[in-house]
Length: 67
Image 1 (cartoon, helix red, strand yellow):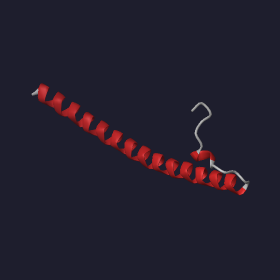
Image 2 (cartoon, one colour):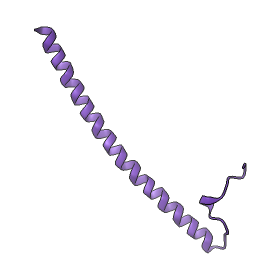
Image 3 (tube, helix red, strand yellow):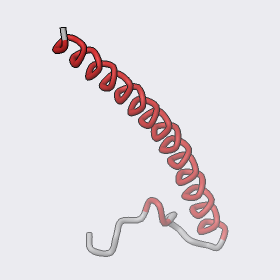
């Protein structure tokens, strides 16, 4: 009976850990999505700024100098 109790306790602990990790992953997913949208918005703003200042190729679309 003691083995069964230990297994049940361990299983309960593992279930709680999985639920906590799931919450963390869900929060991180939402944060990554927000950050991705912000980066895209900033890149679009910078590309518009470059075009407005007479640039021909937006920085976001330009190849790095080593290519």
